[in-house]
Image 1 (cartoon, rainbow, N blue to C red):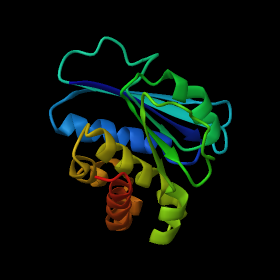
Image 2 (cartoon, rainbow, N blue to C red):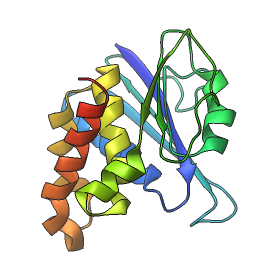
Image 3 (cartoon, rainbow, N blue to C red):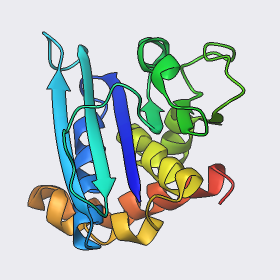
Amino acid sequence: MHHDIIMAGFGGQGILMIGNLLAVGALRRGYRVTFFPAYGVEMRGGTANCTVTISDREIGSPVTARPLGLVAMNEPSVVKFGPRVRAGGVVVVNASIVPEGVLDREDVRVVRVPCNDVAADLGDPRLASMVALGAYVAASGVLPVDAVAEVLPEVLPEKVHRLIPLNQKALEAGADRAGA
């Protein structure tokens, strides 16, 4: 198994946190992992993306030009990274803010999830990226959703541990929206 994914959006959307969650979840399941974050010039409101590679063999580079997956939380991320996804890959798009038709590909599975709306329904709009991660994990099958949920206490700052059950609900809501 060798799976690489780019997660991208505006700074402040939790992109690097969900990338870290996926990486730690895979690491705890015995996979080899790389996590490669990238920030735009600005932090909050600027661009942020990360690449996570999960493999059962040695990983040659943390960088990928043609990932198997993409989580795109905004339209610029879909435009920039969507065309790079390999045929047969999975693209999760935040349908709350990305209009239909931005990524017109039939050779990848495009999963449109209204992440912001689902997060708001759960009571906290900051959960949008967690919804997207749940959708991606379920749609791609890269890891079981519980592999990510299990490492929430390890990855989330202690000051927000009281929100772990809500984060678990967001992961599960995303997985449900992905049709898993």
